[in-house]
Length: 385
Ligand code: SF4
Image (tube, rainbow, N blue to C red; front, side, top):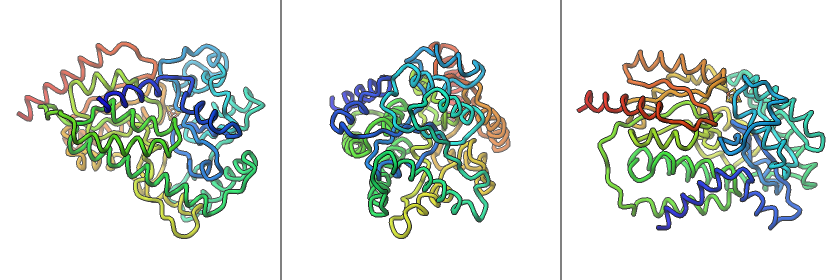
């Protein structure tokens, strides 16, 4: 079956720490350069417009044992920061010409300093998003920041980022975001057609291959999905929250999907951060910055009083037609754990059943998670029956 083959290939790609799609692109483009960017949000269009390949560095899951990174970063720091560094220290990211780390939290900020010291041959930059996203100056400030990173990229590529090239890249990424929104529409409307693991693979792979290829892949999957001979089952519908930065293991999602339909989530939210098309008219730098601030989702690492996160979670649950939520947080993730408390309180207030859990990308045993989710789902099935 073509769909099953596509998902098998995507799983192999996502679980291969040697970044095979990037290496294939470099074979086809021997002079090409690659820009790595750490979670959560980076305007990939800027790198693409200069002819570079943007690649999302989102940790290694359980595919690489963290050895060398432990000598440079304390063990109480979240796993994604340590395993991303391990990927680089073990030579698996030897293709990077530039690494950009958004200033999302203390762990990422300090991790960026370790990258600077560890890889003198690699350019490493922090991307400073505005601290006060609701300030009247936030868009101007962010335009300046995107242009600063753009100048670094121009130096590397040896070619200027023209406004026309940037607009063409925005159009390509708009199309990718539109297709991903379509994937999520199917998840909400017919979750039996697309499992949580499969939809995750579709999103995650966007950051690991050229976006042109990913768009072709998504179009084909969206064509095939409605023909899938899958039947609706009697399962509760939940929203999974807590996957904005460090990613839960695929097998954990598989355990959850055995008991419930995950009809929406914040997994890899950076790839779906911008929720509408970025306008193509006018100044493309400003349009990108404005879209990051004003046409965007929410996460524990963006402070914007106009986006009350707990209310936005309640809205996500309502719009997905979900009956319950799983509010997860990565171990040692301060922003995620802090927000988990607020989410939980808001869900209690709204009378929405929810399960609170922690995870780590390196987890390998899921019996406990499985039992908790099954008990939670069964109790709700009786309640809603
Ligand atoms: S998982 Fe949490 S603590 Fe770690 S880098 Fe991401 S936001 Fe920061």
